[in-house]
Picture 1: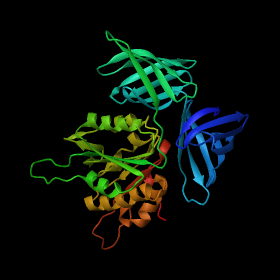
Picture 2: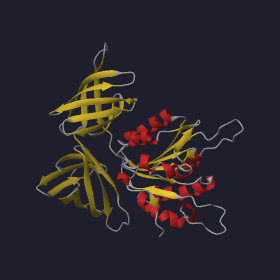
Picture 3: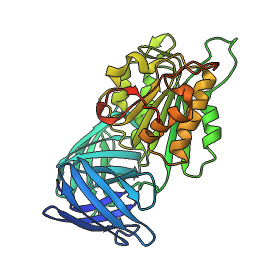
Length: 376
Protein backbone atom coordinates (compact mmCIF):
# COMPACT_ATOMS: atom_id res chain seq x y z
CA UNK A 1 0.00 0.00 0.00
CA UNK A 2 1.48 3.29 -1.12
CA UNK A 3 -0.24 6.39 0.26
CA UNK A 4 2.58 8.83 -0.49
CA UNK A 5 1.81 11.64 -2.88
CA UNK A 6 -0.52 14.54 -3.53
CA UNK A 7 -4.18 13.84 -2.94
CA UNK A 8 -7.38 15.82 -3.46
CA UNK A 9 -9.79 14.97 -0.69
CA UNK A 10 -13.13 15.78 0.91
CA UNK A 11 -11.25 18.30 3.07
CA UNK A 12 -8.97 19.89 0.53
CA UNK A 13 -5.58 18.97 -0.95
CA UNK A 14 -3.45 16.59 1.12
CA UNK A 15 0.27 15.81 0.81
CA UNK A 16 1.44 12.52 2.37
CA UNK A 17 4.94 11.14 2.92
CA UNK A 18 5.50 7.49 3.73
CA UNK A 19 8.48 6.00 5.56
CA UNK A 20 8.00 2.27 5.92
CA UNK A 21 4.78 1.85 7.88
CA UNK A 22 4.71 5.45 9.12
CA UNK A 23 2.75 8.09 7.20
CA UNK A 24 2.81 11.84 7.88
CA UNK A 25 1.38 14.78 6.01
CA UNK A 26 -0.68 17.93 5.85
CA UNK A 27 -4.06 18.88 4.38
CA UNK A 28 -6.47 21.79 4.12
CA UNK A 29 -7.57 24.51 1.72
CA UNK A 30 -3.95 25.06 0.66
CA UNK A 31 -2.76 21.56 1.56
CA UNK A 32 -0.60 22.62 4.52
CA UNK A 33 -2.84 23.97 7.31
CA UNK A 34 -3.59 20.77 9.26
CA UNK A 35 -1.49 17.81 10.37
CA UNK A 36 -2.24 14.12 9.81
CA UNK A 37 -0.08 11.17 10.89
CA UNK A 38 -0.59 7.44 11.21
CA UNK A 39 0.60 3.94 10.50
CA UNK A 40 -0.18 1.22 7.98
CA UNK A 41 -2.27 -1.66 9.29
CA UNK A 42 -3.11 -4.92 7.51
CA UNK A 43 -5.84 -3.39 5.38
CA UNK A 44 -5.11 0.33 5.27
CA UNK A 45 -3.98 3.41 7.15
CA UNK A 46 -5.13 4.42 10.64
CA UNK A 47 -4.38 8.00 11.63
CA UNK A 48 -4.81 10.97 13.94
CA UNK A 49 -5.44 14.48 12.66
CA UNK A 50 -5.08 17.91 14.24
CA UNK A 51 -6.80 21.13 13.17
CA UNK A 52 -6.95 24.52 14.88
CA UNK A 53 -10.37 23.82 16.45
CA UNK A 54 -10.72 20.06 16.05
CA UNK A 55 -8.83 16.81 16.39
CA UNK A 56 -9.68 13.17 15.99
CA UNK A 57 -8.92 9.77 14.51
CA UNK A 58 -9.75 7.88 11.35
CA UNK A 59 -8.84 5.32 8.72
CA UNK A 60 -8.24 5.17 4.96
CA UNK A 61 -8.41 2.14 2.65
CA UNK A 62 -7.08 2.16 -0.91
CA UNK A 63 -9.88 1.33 -3.35
CA UNK A 64 -7.59 1.65 -6.37
CA UNK A 65 -4.18 3.14 -7.05
CA UNK A 66 -5.84 6.53 -7.49
CA UNK A 67 -8.52 6.48 -4.79
CA UNK A 68 -9.05 5.92 -1.09
CA UNK A 69 -12.19 5.80 1.05
CA UNK A 70 -12.39 6.14 4.79
CA UNK A 71 -13.89 7.79 7.83
CA UNK A 72 -12.88 10.25 10.52
CA UNK A 73 -14.22 10.66 14.06
CA UNK A 74 -13.84 14.10 15.63
CA UNK A 75 -13.11 14.11 19.34
CA UNK A 76 -16.32 14.63 21.28
CA UNK A 77 -18.55 13.67 18.36
CA UNK A 78 -20.64 10.47 18.47
CA UNK A 79 -20.50 9.47 14.79
CA UNK A 80 -17.80 8.94 12.18
CA UNK A 81 -18.17 10.70 8.82
CA UNK A 82 -16.82 9.89 5.31
CA UNK A 83 -13.43 11.08 4.04
CA UNK A 84 -12.46 10.31 0.42
CA UNK A 85 -9.43 11.12 -1.72
CA UNK A 86 -8.21 10.98 -5.32
CA UNK A 87 -4.77 11.43 -6.95
CA UNK A 88 -3.07 11.74 -10.33
CA UNK A 89 -5.70 11.39 -13.09
CA UNK A 90 -8.34 9.82 -10.84
CA UNK A 91 -11.23 11.99 -9.72
CA UNK A 92 -13.96 14.35 -10.82
CA UNK A 93 -13.20 16.91 -13.52
CA UNK A 94 -15.03 19.91 -14.94
CA UNK A 95 -14.09 20.02 -18.62
CA UNK A 96 -14.94 22.07 -21.69
CA UNK A 97 -17.12 19.09 -22.71
CA UNK A 98 -18.89 18.78 -19.34
CA UNK A 99 -18.17 16.77 -16.20
CA UNK A 100 -15.84 13.77 -16.47
CA UNK A 101 -15.12 10.94 -14.02
CA UNK A 102 -11.78 9.15 -14.33
CA UNK A 103 -10.58 5.96 -12.60
CA UNK A 104 -6.89 5.02 -12.45
CA UNK A 105 -5.16 1.70 -11.83
CA UNK A 106 -1.37 2.15 -12.12
CA UNK A 107 -0.82 3.37 -15.71
CA UNK A 108 -4.30 2.44 -16.98
CA UNK A 109 -7.14 4.97 -16.92
CA UNK A 110 -10.79 4.57 -17.84
CA UNK A 111 -13.66 6.96 -17.41
CA UNK A 112 -16.96 8.44 -18.45
CA UNK A 113 -18.33 11.75 -19.69
CA UNK A 114 -21.62 13.09 -18.36
CA UNK A 115 -22.93 14.12 -21.79
CA UNK A 116 -22.71 10.52 -23.05
CA UNK A 117 -23.06 8.22 -20.07
CA UNK A 118 -23.10 5.13 -22.31
CA UNK A 119 -19.65 5.97 -23.72
CA UNK A 120 -16.32 4.99 -22.24
CA UNK A 121 -12.86 6.53 -22.25
CA UNK A 122 -9.83 4.21 -22.20
CA UNK A 123 -6.19 5.20 -22.07
CA UNK A 124 -2.66 4.77 -20.79
CA UNK A 125 -0.47 7.10 -18.76
CA UNK A 126 3.14 7.81 -19.71
CA UNK A 127 4.72 10.24 -17.28
CA UNK A 128 2.10 13.01 -16.97
CA UNK A 129 0.31 12.37 -20.28
CA UNK A 130 -2.84 10.31 -20.78
CA UNK A 131 -3.31 9.08 -24.35
CA UNK A 132 -6.91 7.99 -24.78
CA UNK A 133 -9.73 6.85 -27.06
CA UNK A 134 -13.38 7.56 -26.39
CA UNK A 135 -16.21 5.47 -27.84
CA UNK A 136 -19.69 6.83 -27.19
CA UNK A 137 -23.20 6.14 -28.39
CA UNK A 138 -22.98 8.89 -31.02
CA UNK A 139 -19.40 10.19 -30.83
CA UNK A 140 -15.95 8.59 -31.06
CA UNK A 141 -12.69 10.46 -30.56
CA UNK A 142 -9.06 10.19 -29.54
CA UNK A 143 -6.41 12.49 -28.19
CA UNK A 144 -4.33 13.20 -25.12
CA UNK A 145 -4.54 15.00 -21.77
CA UNK A 146 -1.55 16.39 -19.87
CA UNK A 147 -1.65 16.64 -16.08
CA UNK A 148 -0.05 19.74 -14.57
CA UNK A 149 2.67 19.26 -11.87
CA UNK A 150 0.23 20.12 -9.08
CA UNK A 151 -2.28 17.54 -10.44
CA UNK A 152 -5.01 20.16 -10.50
CA UNK A 153 -5.66 20.81 -14.22
CA UNK A 154 -5.66 18.90 -17.51
CA UNK A 155 -4.99 20.21 -20.99
CA UNK A 156 -4.92 18.46 -24.33
CA UNK A 157 -6.79 17.56 -27.49
CA UNK A 158 -10.11 16.01 -28.50
CA UNK A 159 -10.47 14.90 -32.11
CA UNK A 160 -13.48 13.27 -33.69
CA UNK A 161 -13.11 11.50 -37.02
CA UNK A 162 -13.27 13.94 -39.96
CA UNK A 163 -13.50 16.92 -37.58
CA UNK A 164 -10.91 19.54 -36.62
CA UNK A 165 -8.91 19.08 -33.44
CA UNK A 166 -10.48 20.76 -30.40
CA UNK A 167 -8.61 22.07 -27.39
CA UNK A 168 -9.76 20.16 -24.29
CA UNK A 169 -9.21 21.59 -20.81
CA UNK A 170 -10.28 20.46 -17.36
CA UNK A 171 -9.89 21.28 -13.70
CA UNK A 172 -10.74 19.25 -10.66
CA UNK A 173 -14.28 19.42 -9.31
CA UNK A 174 -13.64 19.46 -5.55
CA UNK A 175 -16.01 17.85 -3.07
CA UNK A 176 -17.87 20.50 -1.12
CA UNK A 177 -17.30 20.03 2.59
CA UNK A 178 -20.36 19.04 4.63
CA UNK A 179 -22.68 18.61 1.64
CA UNK A 180 -24.76 15.46 1.10
CA UNK A 181 -27.05 14.51 -1.81
CA UNK A 182 -30.50 12.99 -1.57
CA UNK A 183 -31.42 11.61 -5.00
CA UNK A 184 -34.97 10.30 -5.42
CA UNK A 185 -35.72 8.23 -8.54
CA UNK A 186 -39.42 7.56 -8.87
CA UNK A 187 -41.64 5.58 -11.24
CA UNK A 188 -45.01 7.08 -12.07
CA UNK A 189 -47.56 5.52 -9.74
CA UNK A 190 -50.53 6.38 -11.95
CA UNK A 191 -51.75 3.53 -14.15
CA UNK A 192 -54.86 5.20 -15.59
CA UNK A 193 -56.40 8.64 -16.07
CA UNK A 194 -58.64 7.84 -13.12
CA UNK A 195 -55.64 7.81 -10.73
CA UNK A 196 -54.93 10.95 -8.71
CA UNK A 197 -51.61 12.75 -9.27
CA UNK A 198 -49.13 12.13 -6.47
CA UNK A 199 -45.39 11.68 -6.03
CA UNK A 200 -43.51 10.50 -2.96
CA UNK A 201 -40.35 12.30 -4.11
CA UNK A 202 -42.16 15.63 -3.96
CA UNK A 203 -42.78 15.11 -0.24
CA UNK A 204 -39.15 14.17 0.38
CA UNK A 205 -37.99 17.24 -1.56
CA UNK A 206 -40.21 19.51 0.55
CA UNK A 207 -39.15 18.14 3.91
CA UNK A 208 -35.41 17.77 3.27
CA UNK A 209 -34.95 20.72 0.91
CA UNK A 210 -34.94 22.92 4.01
CA UNK A 211 -31.58 21.50 5.16
CA UNK A 212 -28.62 23.73 4.18
CA UNK A 213 -26.29 20.72 3.79
CA UNK A 214 -28.67 18.63 1.65
CA UNK A 215 -28.93 18.80 -2.13
CA UNK A 216 -32.22 17.13 -3.11
CA UNK A 217 -32.86 15.92 -6.67
CA UNK A 218 -36.09 14.24 -7.80
CA UNK A 219 -36.28 12.49 -11.18
CA UNK A 220 -38.78 10.11 -12.79
CA UNK A 221 -38.05 6.87 -14.66
CA UNK A 222 -40.43 4.99 -16.94
CA UNK A 223 -38.45 1.85 -17.84
CA UNK A 224 -35.20 0.02 -17.08
CA UNK A 225 -33.13 2.16 -19.44
CA UNK A 226 -34.20 5.44 -17.88
CA UNK A 227 -33.59 4.09 -14.36
CA UNK A 228 -30.09 2.95 -15.31
CA UNK A 229 -29.43 6.35 -16.91
CA UNK A 230 -30.21 8.23 -13.71
CA UNK A 231 -28.33 5.71 -11.57
CA UNK A 232 -25.19 6.23 -13.67
CA UNK A 233 -25.41 9.99 -13.10
CA UNK A 234 -24.57 9.46 -9.41
CA UNK A 235 -21.08 8.48 -10.56
CA UNK A 236 -20.39 12.17 -11.24
CA UNK A 237 -21.15 13.36 -7.67
CA UNK A 238 -18.02 13.76 -5.50
CA UNK A 239 -19.95 14.31 -2.26
CA UNK A 240 -21.71 11.57 -0.22
CA UNK A 241 -25.05 10.54 -1.74
CA UNK A 242 -28.19 8.76 -0.55
CA UNK A 243 -30.31 7.20 -3.31
CA UNK A 244 -34.01 6.44 -2.81
CA UNK A 245 -35.72 4.42 -5.55
CA UNK A 246 -39.48 4.32 -5.29
CA UNK A 247 -42.20 2.68 -7.35
CA UNK A 248 -44.32 -0.46 -7.54
CA UNK A 249 -42.50 -3.48 -6.15
CA UNK A 250 -42.86 -7.24 -6.43
CA UNK A 251 -40.96 -10.09 -4.82
CA UNK A 252 -38.58 -10.20 -7.81
CA UNK A 253 -37.90 -6.46 -7.83
CA UNK A 254 -39.30 -3.21 -9.16
CA UNK A 255 -41.97 -3.29 -11.82
CA UNK A 256 -42.59 -0.60 -14.42
CA UNK A 257 -45.34 -0.85 -17.03
CA UNK A 258 -45.80 -4.50 -16.16
CA UNK A 259 -42.11 -5.40 -16.59
CA UNK A 260 -39.67 -6.43 -13.85
CA UNK A 261 -36.45 -4.40 -13.79
CA UNK A 262 -33.22 -6.40 -13.79
CA UNK A 263 -31.90 -5.65 -10.29
CA UNK A 264 -28.40 -6.89 -11.13
CA UNK A 265 -28.15 -4.41 -13.97
CA UNK A 266 -29.31 -1.60 -11.73
CA UNK A 267 -26.74 -2.48 -9.05
CA UNK A 268 -24.00 -2.76 -11.69
CA UNK A 269 -24.85 0.74 -12.94
CA UNK A 270 -24.04 2.05 -9.44
CA UNK A 271 -20.82 0.12 -8.71
CA UNK A 272 -18.57 3.00 -9.79
CA UNK A 273 -20.53 5.57 -7.77
CA UNK A 274 -17.88 5.83 -5.06
CA UNK A 275 -19.83 8.52 -3.19
CA UNK A 276 -22.97 6.40 -2.76
CA UNK A 277 -23.56 5.65 0.93
CA UNK A 278 -27.00 4.03 0.76
CA UNK A 279 -29.50 2.70 -1.77
CA UNK A 280 -32.97 2.55 -0.22
CA UNK A 281 -35.93 0.92 -1.96
CA UNK A 282 -39.13 2.73 -0.99
CA UNK A 283 -41.17 -0.06 -2.58
CA UNK A 284 -43.15 -3.07 -1.49
CA UNK A 285 -41.51 -6.50 -1.26
CA UNK A 286 -38.17 -5.60 -2.90
CA UNK A 287 -36.27 -6.93 0.12
CA UNK A 288 -37.96 -10.34 -0.06
CA UNK A 289 -36.58 -12.43 -2.95
CA UNK A 290 -33.93 -10.15 -4.43
CA UNK A 291 -31.20 -10.82 -1.87
CA UNK A 292 -28.88 -12.57 -4.32
CA UNK A 293 -29.09 -9.68 -6.77
CA UNK A 294 -28.37 -7.14 -4.04
CA UNK A 295 -25.43 -8.86 -2.33
CA UNK A 296 -21.89 -7.83 -3.14
CA UNK A 297 -22.72 -4.17 -3.63
CA UNK A 298 -20.04 -1.76 -2.33
CA UNK A 299 -22.71 0.37 -0.65
CA UNK A 300 -25.44 -0.27 1.93
CA UNK A 301 -28.94 -1.28 0.75
CA UNK A 302 -32.25 -1.17 2.61
CA UNK A 303 -35.90 -1.91 1.85
CA UNK A 304 -39.00 -3.84 2.93
CA UNK A 305 -40.11 -7.47 2.69
CA UNK A 306 -43.86 -6.73 2.86
CA UNK A 307 -46.54 -4.86 0.96
CA UNK A 308 -45.90 -1.86 3.14
CA UNK A 309 -48.64 0.75 3.63
CA UNK A 310 -47.99 4.08 1.85
CA UNK A 311 -48.29 6.21 5.00
CA UNK A 312 -46.31 3.61 6.98
CA UNK A 313 -43.37 3.77 4.59
CA UNK A 314 -43.53 7.60 4.49
CA UNK A 315 -43.40 7.87 8.29
CA UNK A 316 -40.60 5.30 8.44
CA UNK A 317 -38.50 7.03 5.80
CA UNK A 318 -38.96 10.55 7.14
CA UNK A 319 -37.33 9.38 10.39
CA UNK A 320 -34.75 7.12 8.69
CA UNK A 321 -33.56 9.77 6.23
CA UNK A 322 -33.69 12.55 8.82
CA UNK A 323 -31.29 10.59 11.05
CA UNK A 324 -28.85 10.40 8.12
CA UNK A 325 -29.30 13.80 6.47
CA UNK A 326 -29.84 16.08 9.46
CA UNK A 327 -28.68 14.19 12.55
CA UNK A 328 -25.54 12.90 10.80
CA UNK A 329 -25.87 9.19 11.65
CA UNK A 330 -24.19 6.70 9.28
CA UNK A 331 -26.80 4.58 7.44
CA UNK A 332 -25.99 1.44 9.48
CA UNK A 333 -26.49 3.29 12.76
CA UNK A 334 -29.70 4.91 11.50
CA UNK A 335 -31.01 1.46 10.53
CA UNK A 336 -30.23 0.13 14.03
CA UNK A 337 -32.11 3.02 15.62
CA UNK A 338 -35.04 2.90 13.24
CA UNK A 339 -36.86 -0.20 14.46
CA UNK A 340 -36.76 0.94 18.08
CA UNK A 341 -37.94 4.46 17.25
CA UNK A 342 -40.55 3.34 14.69
CA UNK A 343 -41.74 -0.01 16.01
CA UNK A 344 -43.95 -0.95 13.06
CA UNK A 345 -40.94 -0.65 10.70
CA UNK A 346 -39.53 -3.99 11.88
CA UNK A 347 -41.04 -7.45 12.35
CA UNK A 348 -42.87 -6.85 15.62
CA UNK A 349 -46.66 -7.16 15.59
CA UNK A 350 -48.03 -4.37 17.78
CA UNK A 351 -51.38 -5.25 19.42
CA UNK A 352 -54.16 -2.93 18.28
CA UNK A 353 -52.00 -1.17 15.68
CA UNK A 354 -53.63 -0.37 12.32
CA UNK A 355 -50.19 -0.92 10.74
CA UNK A 356 -48.79 -4.37 10.04
CA UNK A 357 -45.02 -4.95 10.44
CA UNK A 358 -43.16 -3.46 7.46
CA UNK A 359 -40.27 -5.95 7.53
CA UNK A 360 -37.51 -3.36 7.15
CA UNK A 361 -34.16 -4.86 6.14
CA UNK A 362 -30.66 -3.39 6.01
CA UNK A 363 -27.84 -4.98 3.99
CA UNK A 364 -24.37 -3.64 4.73
CA UNK A 365 -21.67 -3.13 2.09
CA UNK A 366 -19.61 -6.01 0.74
CA UNK A 367 -22.49 -8.50 0.68
CA UNK A 368 -23.24 -8.93 4.38
CA UNK A 369 -26.35 -11.15 4.68
CA UNK A 370 -29.68 -9.34 4.98
CA UNK A 371 -31.14 -9.74 8.46
CA UNK A 372 -33.76 -7.98 10.55
CA UNK A 373 -32.17 -5.04 12.35
CA UNK A 374 -31.75 -5.94 16.01
CA UNK A 375 -34.05 -4.23 18.50
CA UNK A 376 -32.32 -1.73 20.78
